Length: 248
Ligand code: BTN
Image (cartoon, rainbow, N blue to C red; front, side):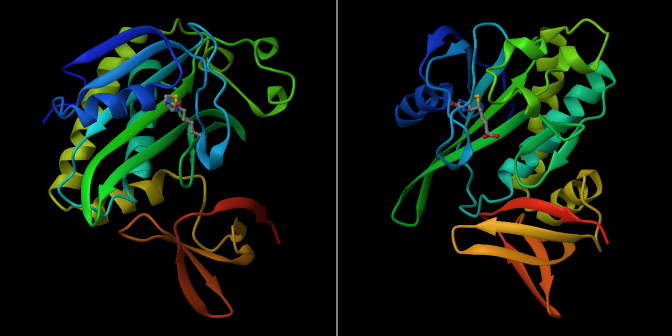
């Protein structure tokens, strides 16, 4: 199965993820992608907005029907694919911050929003949403996110060839998704661990809806969870945010 063989381009929509959901409900082919020039209600993780000005970024959603309902590795897998595509097409090495951020020097360059639909225990579909800032100058970002945001234009002097970037992205995403479908989760988790900005042994503060947790980072488990050791006990976190890396 190849992602990106069928690509629907729209000028404007509220969110490519929402448009992709409608297509998935109709049962379109797996790997179909929706790309929009702009989103009027682009969605980020944790109910945030994703700033999606016209022709400034990549706003894309891929429709997947995984057999395995354990899909927590998919955002990590997509992050790896985007990182690879940027390296291949622009020779820029971007950072991965667990679980779904693409960073340039601590500024946000892109992110992944993975949404799924279950009927009981049965997984109906997954929408893999990818947002990547391409052409912004700093002043193009709204003031409130300006200090925290970057675009590819801000980090490379090379001209951004979107066609080439997308070709690399579909190739890379298809390869990683094949591994996921073959059950090679450990390979994906190890690759994420090697490519992420965190190093095992670092002290971290995580936050989730239950509170803040401080411990030592011990890697990524095969379901994509972040392993944190607190008072000698290791626990995997799935839905959490890294609040700080604590340097001794
Ligand atoms: C994040 O918060 O880091 C995730 C951002 C994901 C944004 C992309 S843009 C394409 C797709 N459609 C959306 O509404 N969101 C995702």
